[in-house]
Length: 290
Length: 284
Image (tube, each protein chain N blue to C red):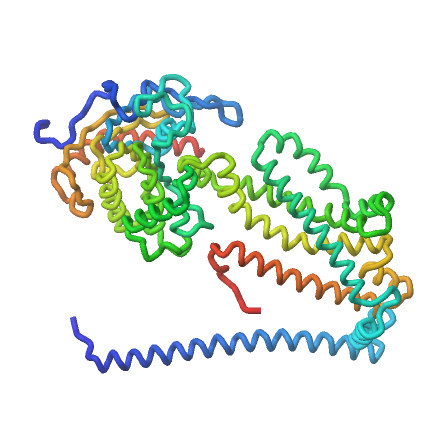
């Protein structure tokens, strides 16, 4: 065995600090590279589209152009749309989406937990849920318009059915997948059936439920927009269908981009909520700053 | 063989003392599989554990070792025969029972202290009292610095310590353990066995400890039950007369321990071979 002299240790310490600094610099460089490449792809894509439209390789009448879309959005923001100010259209669509999302999600979670905990109910109702789930739900939009009219209720109803089945299926699965040993453990530690549901079943189904909320918010938005498409007085869906009727490709693309931005903002908020609720979970192996 | 110097004394399995903590009397358990076949899990099974006694159950894979534990908890009911805990027939999950699982059964969304306090809280203890008690038990298993950690932030050995604290906080009179340390590495397992014996000597519960590891069984137990290949029944019972307190790291080099393990292994070996060959046939 040989002893290491203190000077060696000091030298070693400085070399560790240097190596760490190097590693951090490498990580920063890679991050810059990723962000830079993402921006480059966006610029090249938009640039080619714009050039293609300018030289008539891509017909701007059908496929619009980035500058045309921008002008359309700008005119909606500054002058308002044919059916009123832009923010009102966004507000109406968001309101329908959120209402539908909330009702559908709560209903789906409650139904999923009840059926997941009760084998008999699950066996009896599973066939009906399968049947209801196999109906193309967009068709129900027409039914809702006839029954509930051109107002908000028909859009909310369509968003609800879009959301309900997705959340229900996940909540049900989550309850069923709850770890048997964990349930037995709670039972032996002294938990009542109700305590087992609240402190074992629901938390362990939570990651399934949250995963379904991500997907189903998009569905709620589809439900609201399609509902507006089919007949409405306000909203982004009506804006699209008006633009479509006027062969205004700029309008269709502009509305599409506004919807995408809305979906991304809400997706971001749901992710924040999810991280807050399941902070006990280990960090995903490959989490990159975006 | 010179039986007077032996540490393992073969007992007759029929004696059923009235004051036993656990008495499983001539139990047979059959169940119908989902495809409609009748399966016998255990047959003509008799076992008694006295108050404060540490009993280990060893046997080949699939012989119904875990079934015996579930009979005691009441999660399974015998087809014939009866099971008594503390002199009373088993009807429901008893408050006297603690159970340590093979798999990780901690609640991953609860921190260490919330996991340990779970039992008292479920049983209706006031919050302040439950957390004080939990803090005390976390200290006893040496995890005071990790109260606020979540299970995924702990090592396998530390999670097992939390599981022990979670079980012991209810001060169970009956402690059932289903291969609790089988997923741990050798060094951690030895440390956990010492930890268990330390906690047990403070509480003096009656223990049924199921394992497939004969050396673990001999090192821990007062009494070892050897089961036959499935459907399991008791093949033989041995009393282990090694002095307590035992130190796990040293006991495996004790000549008396080695001799005892050898004797029981001779008994167990043919059952293990039988179980293995059946397993191979079944997989064809």
